[in-house]
Length: 242
Image (cartoon, rainbow, N blue to C red):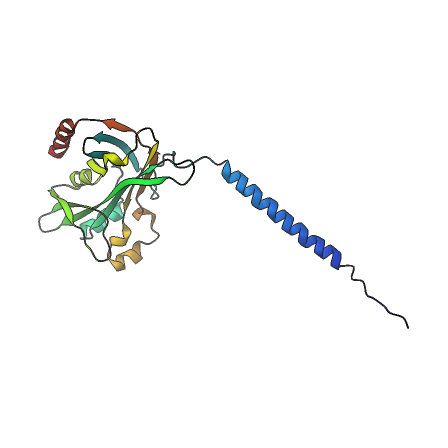
């Protein structure tokens, strides 16, 4: 009696191919991890952009330390596209959101958020009076809460109203105790047109349109200027008079 054992020649090459694929994949993963470890940190980078192609930038950002907290002053510059201005004239109110976050640098872990604030700015045209109205409220508009305005002002022209929208004067963003001396901190500033606050049918119409995307972002080291409370109050009053 003769026993015949079949030998599959292709088995060994396939096993080798499988091991080779696993080895190549492991090398690829290690290479990606190493390349990420040598990538420069983005937290110290500064970015200011607008996706609508128009000139939009952060023209000024100043942070100061006073006896009662950390205050921020900033200015942004951009031109409203014609389609956006046309919507305003038709009675569509625009909502702009300004957000500031302060992070404490930690080399051993992700940076710790130690302060920050947000505000919402509403810009609307009043056809009966032919005037522009700006409402500024603290925080973001939630699903169940409207804008709780702390500042209301009427303007005769759109450029005057836009000046109030594009400027932040002495805005308290953190407490003095939140900033630890001798430690590096980074500040993230963002300004955007909040499309989620537009009427629902209007949101569908403007979705994906570049003219409606107005976004400015900047991340940079926190540099504090020490000033006395009396001087800060005087400067704040001067800004308000303007």
